[in-house]
Each structure stands twice: as C-alpha cells, then as structure tokens.
Image (cartoon, rainbow, N blue to C red):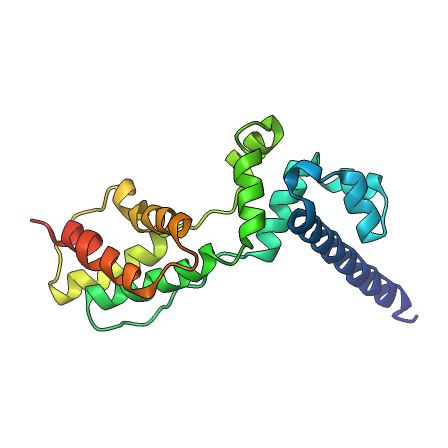
Length: 200
C-alpha cells in the first residue's frame, strides 16, 4: 500500500492554506484601495480567484472576513520575556512592541474601519467578539512578579483596568501620531504607569 492518499491529503491542505491566504490578501488589498464601504464578498472572491460560496462557508459576512484578515495580517505582538533589570525598564520593553503593533495596520485601513464601525451593525457585532485584542495580563503579571521580588512594589493584585491601562494609553497616542514616538512611550511609563504601580 502506498502513501498516495496521505500525499494527496497533505497537498489539499497546502492548497487550502494557499487559498485562505489569497483571500486574506484580497481583503487587505481591497480595504487599502477602496475602504470597507466598498468591500464585498463578490469583490473578494473575484480578486482571490474563488467563488462566493467558498467564502460563505467560512465567514458569515464581510465584517467577519475583514476582521479575520486583520488578525492574519497583524498578529498580536510578542512581548520580551527577559528581565530588563528594574520595573521601569521592563515596562518600556513591554510597550515598545505594542507601539509597533499599533502601527502595523496601514492608516487608510484604520480610518476606513473606524468610520464603518460607527454605522455598520455587522461590523459592530463582529468587532465585539472577533476584533484582535492585546491581552497584557500575562506579560504584566511577569513584570510585576519580578518587581515584587526586587522590592519595587507590593504584592497586591492589580485591578483589571490598571493592567489594561498601558494598552489603552498607547491606543490613544497612536491616534495622535503613528508611529508613537519612543519618548512618548518613556513618558507614559515614567509619568503614569510607574507612579500608579508604586503608589502606597
């Protein structure tokens, strides 16, 4: 007995992944060219050289497809694992990849999605459950564990809003300037985050 069946299956998987990537590429190109308002399943199918039924088997509507493409093109940032020596340095090292992640999406796509989300019910619904998010919880927990060991902070649990505060501040700054200047990252850490974390 030969392994042809396995080879065929493996080949099919490769074709499937290649087609999926072509679909994401098509969505990305169309968003950049004409915005979310002009995005349609028919246009994506045509650009990706496939059929609309293929798209609808995987994604219920263009909103789900657009956010799937966003997750594919802009994966979550990878945060440093090593000890930078003190709390301040750990936090700066944490926010720098976050700053890079926030500007990974082309500005024209960001503007298009921000405008559409104000009035498109499908996009609003899909965003609530599928929008790429950055969970700073695990990385912040590591940073705080090291800070407690150094005696820089107490071991009290951090409220969820405090854990997410660095990401929220970086989002605000990214709307003002893209990319976020490094001195702004340092100011956020020095003037806001460190004082909050080290407060009595």
